[in-house]
Length: 290
Image (cartoon, rainbow, N blue to C red; front, side):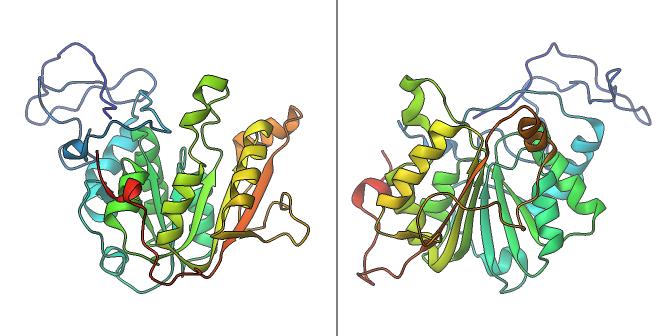
């Protein structure tokens, strides 16, 4: 999953020279052939050895990285970033404490993530995305606000859940405005599917909240159907259906623009229930790599 920019080679700056920037302040591409985009930052394909013939719910987005984002990636990735490479992860070691941890899959440019982290400093947020500018922006915002409860993960959330996180290690799962894959032939790429929920349930503690939000009504209906039918989750709404937007989920600028245009945003809040079989493990299809 490469997010690299394919631009012509340019001379490298000499000693004391500034890296060249475009007119909009973004960092221009000056790498020699084969040189990593960010030597101390996120890898282009962290789980390359875990290649699988699997339909993915995401695709890399190529866009320009600003100078500030590039600086944050170089400076802060070794401290607050991690590549999803399939190796086991110790959340206590990662965050440096035993506070509860919530997994956020897809965070865009990170503004909402930073607001939630600031409002709840005793909860760690493990935020996953593949968008390099967004990763840099979130790191930059966390640094500016002095937040130490955010970790940024680069790569495939399925590999993170299946291979890197231990059972019952998460206190929540947030999926806000995922790609709706609106065309019918692409519905199979949507993240919220029964198989994904079965995997996620093994990593969520009983009582953990799954919170989804989308402004694509057909996808909201599918989410509601799939979550309602899954035996490991129950709707927090006594009468079923969608939930009011909880106060802890910020109203983002993008969402506000959509609401101004008449878009309907639906929130879903489901709770992980106590497993009927305490020894239940992942089904073979979810644990075995192709």
